[in-house]
Image (tube, rainbow, N blue to C red):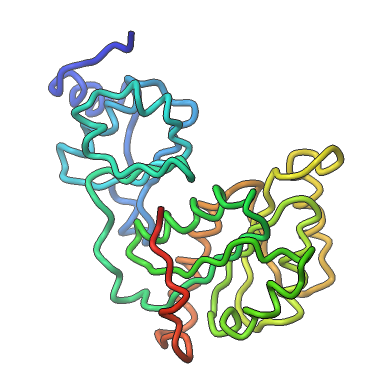
Length: 251
């Protein structure tokens, strides 16, 4: 049975910094809020975090929040979470307002449907930050026609997040076809020598297509944060042509 604390006790814990000390000034410094990595946090730590954020009227984005960990949290806090079971992400007290300075859309491409959880983590990170995105699923190079049939639409986006496991060939192929910034996300999808995503990561690092950048294995959140930083540097024009047909709401 998980122990629950009163709001005053949790606030006192948070304010004393005995377990957690939130960086509420990070958005001013970097343009990005502190995000809560829930995977190794205890229920008490999470509840202290929620209490501290609630006391300041602060929203939060939470990653690696498993259904089991969520079910242990007090209903008072769980009721304030917009939770996605696919990406295991939570949004506490609502997303941020749409960013007037970040109007450009980001395109997220998942090589296979097995990569969707990581792609959704990127999508939800952007959504929390008030930035729309377009998601293409199951367009890996094993069926190259699925990618080439969408390449005109993809090439309109100045920032593309490419999520792929196994041999992670997708970012390299995109690197030879589109002009935009490519942020690759190797995933842990694959058999045997795929080695939990290490083969995918090494393949991206060894890519012959110049200018591709990569984040850590399964780190859709990190890729979205890189995209948010990039958006501030690439201008404020909208993607050319009509893109609304490809718009996708986060799960």
